[in-house]
Image 1: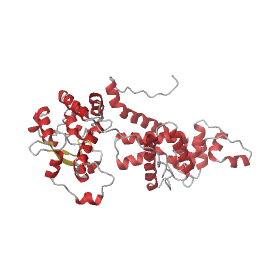
Image 2: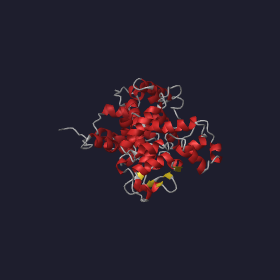
Image 3: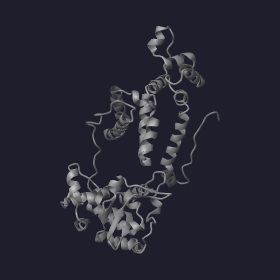
Image 4: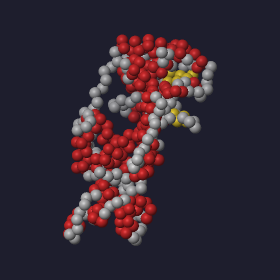
Length: 395
């Protein structure tokens, strides 16, 4: 055909395709990253080094630039500035991406792709987080015209913000800039940049509009339907305020019916990696209230005698995302007309309306409030019985 193409079949069904999408996107991105790693400037610095190492730096670099199809004038425009060429009466044929790459490489900076690789190696983020990093920095690189982002200045950062605002809502732009801002903070510590040019650019951008509190009638209808569907996950979230990923990753051994408790912990096997969203901070044990006890006994009666590490919801795990919640969260909205996170918010709202201390809320849901003092949180440790009494107030 004369062209190179990347073809991937996501799955036999639409649901399977959606499940595999993130894994495939990461695979394709890695493939193109490998191909992009064959660029002439990258090869020069990785194989022969910069001018301080390679005595024939210019000769080798010119050869590599020529090998990818650049003519003499284009090569000169990569190696020298416009003023330098015009002073010698030589033509200038702009090659901005390669020129920026060379400047960045000479200064010791690397491409955003290598930034991500370094950060992934150090932090081991969730697959969804890595995908977000790659997507947002790639958009910035495409706009800037180079994968070497260290050369972006404050004025260009402000211009990119304006560019995003032409395409997205302010709340979405605020989220995207937040990712980039955090990456520049990392880049400062990594010695890639000197200052955070994105600082302050999120100010005055509107937040997304919060959803209204759930109507009690809608919750009642959802409870009836959830019982009909034998959807235990709905009730686990309704009576603990946990995240969808928390309850969908539960094992039989995590539910103790004799002690009336549920534990949310990180764990890992050869095939599955269970990570709570907040990491070690989110590890906790919560009481089972009487309403939840009755539902568990009805929908999962064998949990009383089953103390194995078998998953309660084995079909929920998505290995490409290393998450348990995606499928259930989608079904929650379809079945009940309620977003999964709205159920968690409903629990927090109920307890707040009953004047339950924020410290109790934290023990139950790991939800923090802006006004909470870390010192107070550290010293305030509600008793198990007090927390259990608070959870009996949930309806």
